[in-house]
Image (cartoon, rainbow, N blue to C red; front, side, top):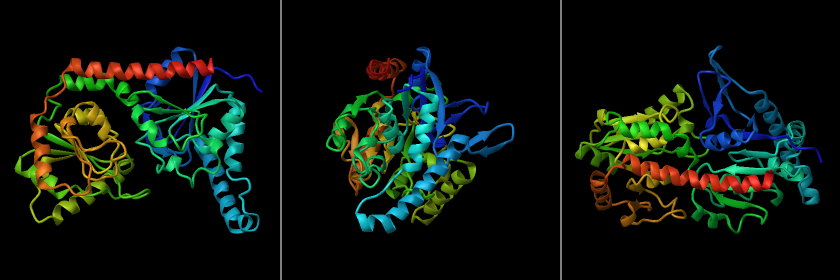
Length: 401
């Protein structure tokens, strides 16, 4: 076995990356506080970008594919061809797949042998990467991105062709979600509560926003938009009853466009057109001056939550962030019932397909009477999340040092 270097490989798609004015500087809000602590202990960070990633070159003013993303893309495409051939010809005759993920496994094997890291971490760390890392005795961490259960893409049976390809550690913002995957995960996987990492990442900005009264919209409701299905560029419609009540109460509605529908100006504007088509189709007039569209690449989720009185969504996992910051939450579907249930005393409303007018009115009334967080209260919340993160990291250090 090779001697491991004091380095960490960070695996991510560019969708989750933030770039500064310097094209070479990238950050990952879902991991930055963790990476900062690793760097303070002398670890070097190596960035590896997933297939189809695009970064922006500020000098040339254009997007480009990082080299690691190009090579990974080739490996994934070759494996897709191999998978089709297996399905059509080989599997029918001998009832098993041969060499699934072979090219991607070869890619990760060469990369890990070259870099010799002590740890691999990322968002939805690929099955093949975890498989090779385990064979080389390199620990791996999957960072939570959205709520996860056995129906999530990363844990679905049709994605998992062997039980050896799971990450060694799963970082969760909330420990109560562990139970949803308890029967799915192999024994070698350890789930750790790490807190809301991106809240810690955004600490300075949101504390500044909280003290700046001009930024806060005291009478606004935040709607977290989601897209129709995987690969779609169309957002779900806003509940007409919400729009109607917003009009009657003369409130602002802040619509936070999903990041996948806001990757560039063209996609963002296209999403806005879909919303406008919906508004124009309603049997009442929508005052568009009372609607603000928020671009997730320009303002943090936490800042959007703080500048609102309440939070509404169909199925966005960000409802947990609003709940953490003590905002009333209404979910107009039952898609998230495995994670929370309606509880008015806990400021949780809906969690069902059909929301009657009475519930909408109770929710709006609660939003308008709900007290905003003080700076001290917000600091306490952030410090508790930091404590969770460091507790999780200390367990990681025991495994790699």
